[in-house]
Amino acid sequence: MEHDSSTRIVQDLTVLISTSDPGARLPSTRALVARYGASPVTVQKALRELTRRGLIESRPGTGTFVRITRTARPADYGWQTAALRTPMAAAIDVSATMRTVSNDHIALHAGYPDRELLPERLVRSALTRAARSDAAFARPPVSGLPELQAWFASELADATPSGLTPPAASDVTVLPGSQSGLSSVFRALVGPRQPVLLESPTYWGAISAAAQAGADVVPVPSGRQGPDPRDVARAFDETGARAFYAQPNFANPTGAQWSREAAGEILEIVRARSAFLIEDDWAHDFGIDTDATPLAAQDAHGHVVYLRSLTKSVSPSIRVAGIIARGPARERIRNDRAAESMYVSGVLQRAALDVVTQPGWGTHLRHLRHSLRARRDLLVSSLREHASDAHVDGIPRGGLNLWVRLPDGVDLRRLVRDCEADGLIIASGDEWYPAEPEGPRIRLNYSGPNPAAFADAARILGARLSE
Image (tube, rainbow, N blue to C red; front, side, top):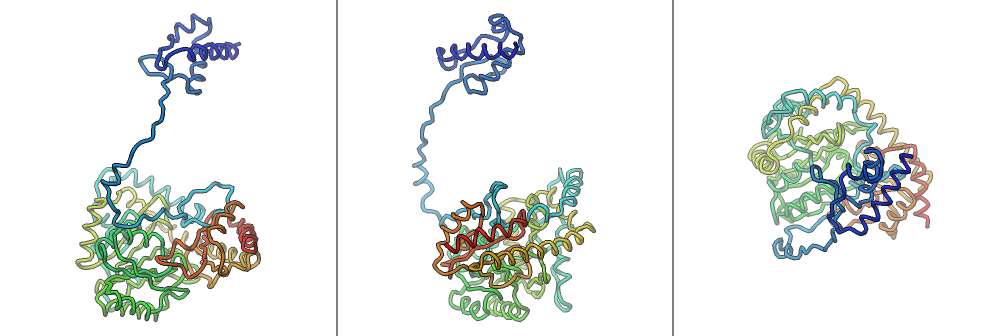
């Protein structure tokens, strides 16, 4: 009966609303109760249904009114064309690796590890403790919490050979993620219209950050073993560049790790030209068959500016990284950071420090190594069995990705689109080139969700490549 009464009230009021002007006030609840001989609960139920349909709106303390329908008019933003003028740098779209896709897709495109590969228990406990600490209310120093600075410095100092001066805690600046650090480095050490060398292919975020800083990007070819030192020397000499951005360990996207000999040669080339090597050690915690060996540990004179991120290995929500730079370069970078964001959340810094100093952190990294090896090998074997036209030039010894070469002539855009239509999301390799790619490539992330679907993913890719 109550339901029937509510329906009857809705139908009757709908007719009333259709003949009323927008903004007209409806009778009060008390008046409606008397009018329909229903309980206040039944009347309120009817009014909620009319609100859900968008026919009325309630204004607290005033009453209920017929909803005013607002006609959307196109806005005119033409004035901004003249106000903004020509952009300093060409616009670069957000990478496809940042897309969020539904669970019914096989996702091999993303750049972050799956949740099951993260130290969830450590992170939850650390955030709880940080929220209860003074860090939740105090402003941290611009350069970062002293204890976290000391941790970043000591980690690199442990890899520094005897006879070389290790970095000090005061050389560390804590960042809200390494991407913001790259932006600061390119602004502070390179600047607009100045050349900067980048490996090709390389991390898309570095290409974007350099472009946004207005720098003149100069690609240096890099393959399975990293760049040829002779190409690096030639690029420095031809351009007069004073900075080289590189990933000596488990490079994104190629997975390359420089040999000790090549690393020494490139560092000597940088020193001889009074230049900087911007070392991005993003995959420090993702060694599989070997460990990361920071090139910064071999430098005592400030030529290497070292970026060390915790975001991917701890949690995407704890965007904390450290940058180690010495001398005037440190001050320029720190000043840029202060102007950009003043300081990094003390709660996030405290939580990150808590995680990496827990005994369970080392245990987690050992388990992570085994998990990444199993996932990597499963994806490689699946490609070899079901997608023979997708060639993995070399098995990466660390990192999160496979860099896959495709047959010449493959329409990469069509391949990505067709695979998505079949439920497989892959990343086009074009994003990782600062200039024209040498051929069609895709990057596949083996640390994402649902490794049990790797075989299905390979079948989809193989079928599309064979068309």
